[in-house]
Structures are given as structure tokens and as C-alpha cells.
Length: 380
Ligand code: NAD
Ligand code: MG
Image (cartoon, rainbow, N blue to C red; front, side, top):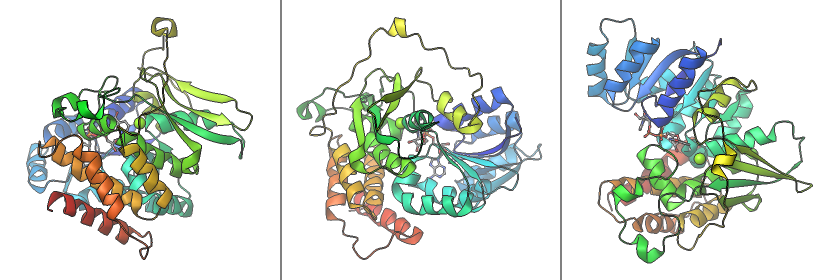
């Protein structure tokens, strides 16, 4: 393939799987970045020979520079380094696999540099959907979803005429604690929350799956990607994670995308669109699976989904605040400083207390709302 990509967050779950796809299809890798795991980044750099790598952590960047001294690979540090990777002139596509709203500025930088975006970093759209979509339109670049549900919907929409879509149906595995009562959730541990039934992902999104915040973020993500309001986005619990999402058309025909739960399918489609190419992912054996089950989500017990829908309906900076509050709360939960049920509590409080009637949705206001919300939770 003649494609040339930069991968932001290459050492994470999505980043590593993106490199699997790049390896298989001989996609040229221009830049790789990480937060601070330089052992993995060094190994990736030696294999894929990018023109540059960047590490957010300054000390780790210096260490990597020394480690790669025998190569021609340029080593950058800090946020500037990540942004340099996002706009590297040799890349045509930027895969954003950073976790959290820290991905917003790199996404905006890449769009302004005229790059197509393969977006795993859903927080980009939750925190800044309005400015991201405006920039995509203005620059005439393409934004391809990597999130499995959104890739499924994007795949189902191929060939659908404008106006044909009636609603989207996001499927949800239900996460680690499906079926539990609030009483039972009071005492769950970090270790239990990190055990996802179907997917092996980064810690933050695994916790988000357990609280159903992930599905709330995905409702907001879908509303920006497919330009549908909250009431046209259904969520359906589907424990097996075989149907990755569906669309319902005006005539009530439903189209679904199915496959083994493996992110390399949506990652590859975002990189090879509209082509379909061989994949390392196994074939789906439906007779072995035999049964697919469905249920309504329990939003009384898992409140984050309802809170995100409320934030979406309010619009403005409310989704930014919900996302920032969740990132801070998940960080505290992973550090053992709060309980599992305090996550929805903190997110609900942040959304309830926020009043942004005077604030327009600009990059500055998004970053300020994000920072203030985080600080209020991390340093109350
Ligand atoms: P992860 O924690 O495994 O990896 C995150 C990557 O981002 C790492 O390379 C890390 O070094 C880097 N990073 C972390 N903080 C950073 C910062 N502040 N600035 C720059 N780089 C930073 O996460 P993941 O599971 O790969 O998820 C990445 C994104 O993809 C998230 O937005 C997640 O919601 C989304 N996503 C993941 C999956 C999955 O299967 N893992 C599925 C769908 C969507
Ligand atoms: Mg998803």
C-alpha cells in the first residue's frame, strides 16, 4: 500500500494493533508517539523505522534519544513533540490512539495540517465534537471511525442514500459488572472492574465499559459522526460482542455488521477504506456461537449512560465536562482513592453543577472547562 501513517499512542492497545495491520499491509509508518513507555516504543521504532518518534514525558524522551542514538530516527519530547508527529508532512493519515481528552489538540493539529484521521480517541469527539467537525469540513479531510461500534455503523451505511437512516443501534457488552445490583457494586474492586468479558483494552476504557460511561461517550461520539440526535441512538446490551452495531432504515429494515471481537477489523477498514483486504482476524463461526442475546441497558444502576445522554441534550460544554469528570474519577478509582460507585456520582455532580450559558464552544473554552472540571475533582 502507498499509505503513510503516523500513530499517536502507538504503545497502547489500539496502537499495537494498528502496527499489526501496518505490518501485514506494508503501510509506511512515519511517526510514533507514547506517553512514557519507551521500552515498547524503542522496539517499535527499530522494527518500523519511522522518521520520528515523540514521548510526552521529557525525561523518558531523553532516555529514548540515547537508546536510539545508533539510528537516524529523530526523537522529540513533550506536547510539542506529539503535535509534530500529528502534522508530519510525510504522513497522509493520522491514527489517534491516545486515551482521553489529551487527544483533542493532536486531532485538531492533524486536521489543520490536512491529514485524514483514523479516530480511536473517542474523547476527541466527546470533548470537542463541534470544532472537530467544523475543522474537518473546512479542511476537506476524512474522519474514519476506529471504535468498533462506529466502524460497524459506518460499514452498514455504505451504499445508503442520504435521508435513509432512521436510527442507529449501538450494541454494548455490558462490561465486567453486567447484571449486578447497586448494592453489589458498592464493594467491587479495581481488579474485578479491569476484567472485561470480551475485549482486552487499556485500563481507562475497561473501567468505562464497567460503568457504561463508555457507551455514554459512544452515544455522543455517534451523534457527531453520523449527525443523529440523542433520541435516534438506541443502546442494546449484547453480551457476546459479535454484532458490533446496527442501523435501522426508514423502511424498518435493520442492517448489522458482525465479526469476531478483534479491533484489527475496524482499524484496518479505517486505513484501507473503501477497499476490503485480507485480515489476520479469524472467520466468524456462527454455528459454534449458536446464540446471540439482547437486553435493555439498566440505566438506573449504571447511571453514566443516562448522564451522558443528558449532557448531549444540553449540548455546549456539558459533554466536555462529563468526559473530564469521568477521566478524573477513573484516575482516582484506579489509584484506589474512591469506590466504583463514586465514579457516576462525581460525573453526575460535575454535569449537574456546570452552567455554561455564556460560553461558546471554542478550543480555548473546551480546554478550560476540561482543566477546571478535572482540578475540582482531583484537588477538591
Ligand atoms: P491505552 O491506555 O492502551 O493506550 C493509550 C496510548 O496513549 C499509549 O500509547 C499511551 O502512551 C498514550 N498516552 C496516554 N496518555 C497520553 C497523553 N496524555 N498524551 C499523549 N499520549 C498519551 O488505551 P487504548 O485502550 O489503546 O485506547 C486508546 C483510545 O482508543 C481511547 O480513546 C479508547 O477509548 C479508544 N478505544 C480503544 C479500544 C480498545 O480496544 N483498546 C476500542 C475502542 C476505542
Ligand atoms: Mg466501542
